Length: 408
Image 1 (cartoon, rainbow, N blue to C red):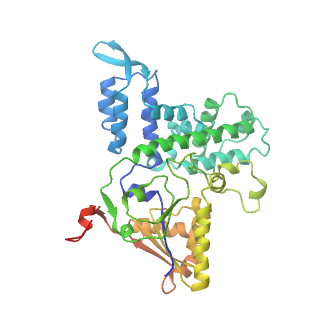
Image 2: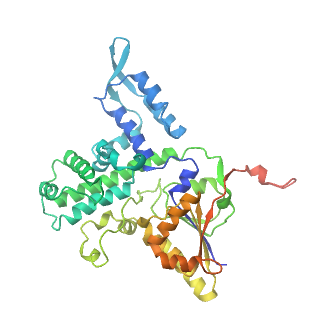
Image 3: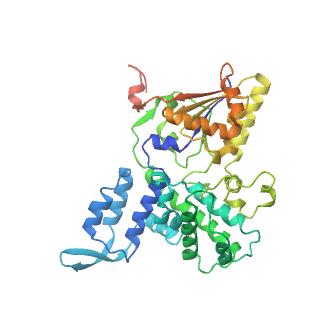
């Protein structure tokens, strides 16, 4: 066999009980905004006890926010037996920064808009899809960047073809007009939208740094026993490095937290046809492939894949590729396609259960096509296989790994 490659998606962090969904981040931001907004008068004791304490989120995240809240200096106004916040002076620099990134942010205001809640299944928000729908709308209706924002929103009232398109349009228009008063044309709007995307990415980094302090006590045996040569990590966090003992080189395809400067990629996939994309580049910087170029996060992946191809061509050694926690969504097609389609790879896709397996099969078809998937599955041995992942196991302490009488 050739090299071993492990590809990790956000399901990997979630499997280790880390609250890394965009919804978890929005929940956190909502509470930050409540604390920082002076005109939000609320009972101090009631807010801490009922809202923060009962907040269903990772304990370390909750505790840090409660601690920060309690450590603030309050000037209160007594109304009978109830104390209300009148003025807030802050002391936590990270939370100060996070609030500054989101308080007048078009994307945050759009994501957190109540109008949108009917659009989402179980209130689950896909940042990348929502950004794509909004950017695609602007791009398709503004061939010239000099077009006025007012004219742009008067030209059409729909974003996408979904039943909830009117709601999306209303929420996006509201967020833009509320947070970009001095923006007159599409050129200025593009600038503000990208700056706000950069800011919400930095806010997400602050949140994930807090999340990463959580203590993890279990790991996946499937992953612990792999010993991969390369790891392609679609997460921003360092969960694998913190939990699994390996000398493998880890490549953060979408950047990582605590990188200076921030290199986290938060973008969208291509929406123009192959014939149209080269002549429609006004909003290319919002796309993942462009951000990977700009933030220098795509180079290593192609280097590794070329090594895999070369090894197969010279020595007929196929690389073993293991995919864990990645939904195989088409937004990452430009990275996943090579590994799924190539004859130089033997791919194992770990699935949580049979329902998940069905979704992954459908997503692989979107990436390489039904015919190609059947060709790869029906080879002997199969070049793509779906496997139900094993349950988690406790992380063994280092002393437990030593044999009796072993020298440390």
